[in-house]
Image (cartoon, rainbow, N blue to C red; front, side):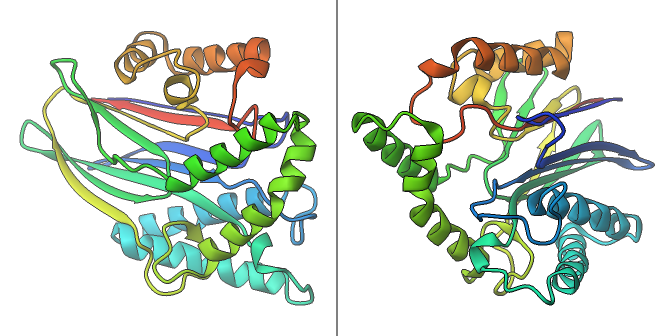
Length: 285
C-alpha cells in the first residue's frame, strides 16, 4: 500500500489546510481539511497562528482521538467538533467574538476497507474538497460531484470589480467583505450547515457515500487550492493529474502549481485569492 500526503501554505509559515493519509490495521483513513480564510479584522483566540489554523489543527487532533476510540464517521466528527468547541468557548469566554469570525472549514474523509478483491470506500464530505478515484482501466470518477454555488457568485462579483478597474487585491477584498461576512454568518448558523463549524445548528448536512473500488483502483483527495491545477488554471485534466501524481508524486504536482502561480498569477481572472493553500492525499494499494 502506498500512502502520501502534501500540504503547502500560500504564505510561508501559515497554512490553514490539514491533510493526512493514515494506515490502519484494517485499511486506511484519508482526511482533508481546508480552513476558510478568516473575514474578521483580527484573530481572537490564537493571534500567533490564527484562529482558522487553530480550529483545523484542534479538530484534527480531536478527530484522531475519536477514530482511535473506534467511532464511526458521523459520531467521530460530532465528538471532535464538540471537543474543539468547548476549548474555543473557554479561550474566548471574555471576548465578544462576532459570528462571522467563528472559523469554518471544508472537510472530506474517506475510510478505505478491504472488500473481497477490492476495497469499500466510506465518504463523509462537507464543503468543496475534491475526491477522485482512478480505476485500473484508467477511468477517473468524481466520488463527490459537488459544485459550490457560492464560488460562481464570488467570481461574478470579482469580475464586476475588475471591470470597474479595482485590481488591487486588498481593495477588492474590502469591497467584498460585507457579502463574505454575511455568508460566513450563514455558514455558522444555518440549520443543517454544509460547512464544518464549531457549533452546528442541528446535524451537519454531510454528503455520505459508500463506493466499491475495484481491485487496483487509486484515490486522490485534495483541497480546492490544489485542484486549481485542473479547474482554475487548466494545466491538467483529472486523468493527467492522476498520472502526474502516480508517476512523480504529489510534490511534483504541487511544484507545478506554485511555479504557475509565481509566473502567471496576473493572468488569472475571477479569483479572490491569487494564491491559495494547497493540499492532497494519495492512496493506491
